[in-house]
Length: 341
Image 1 (cartoon, rainbow, N blue to C red):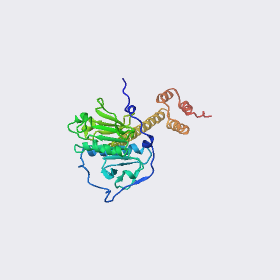
Image 2 (image 1 turned 30 degrees about the vertical axis):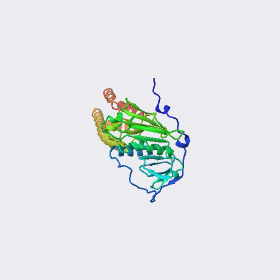
Image 3 (image 1 turned 120 degrees about the vertical axis):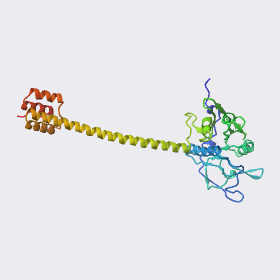
Image 4 (image 1 turned 90 degrees about the vertical axis):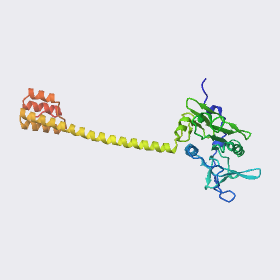
């Protein structure tokens, strides 16, 4: 049975969420009540956590630029919202907004003309429970269309297959349902790829957590890719490597071109020398067979007509069979000149 694409199992995102352009710039805050910077709720994980966050920011910006609508991708930006009459605060690892922000301060949900499109949390053993329970309720309550969690724990490698700190796998996603609660998005393990694969209706891209990339410590193993072509969004580091490779290839081609050009010059010089040697040999042969005047007249005929020397074999036949005047008649005919009166 042919496997259906992941897009077939996911309900479409309402146009108001995925396609509405919001030109207004939303103000940010930096006050004692809503400080632009505040201590993180947990210690930032180095290594893979940071790699995943950096890759997400680069990939999301690359995807959203093609939408030709205002957007903002923010990381660890203070997000304030009201719950039961009190201000609450969280720091999403990565958040996608369908509008631009004014300044670099904290943001308040109440100031937003629309909810964030999606949030990514790269969990740690210390935050996984809060990410799965408390933040999940908060993000749903704020109307955020999608919520994704990634397990960055890398050792042992088999945790990519099993999930080290996330039950059910290291990549999980939810979509906001009609009742305001999150419904799980399909994420499956594909043995042939060695990766977990999910689909984001908001981003219209697949998410993959690859064991091969996970092992290489390149981008934490997480990739966004086109669902049809399966072409992943390249990281900035990889694009720099591509640029360096292209530049190296360009330099190598330029060097090869210089070598070919020098070789061509050598061959051209050799060819010109060979032609000059042949011409000298032919004219000397004609002068020796008849006289210098016949050789000189032959040169004049060729130059007047802009013609090349006849084939050596033909010249040898003319020399063997004709006297001087008849030889020159053959030369004039070869050059397309009229016979002399």
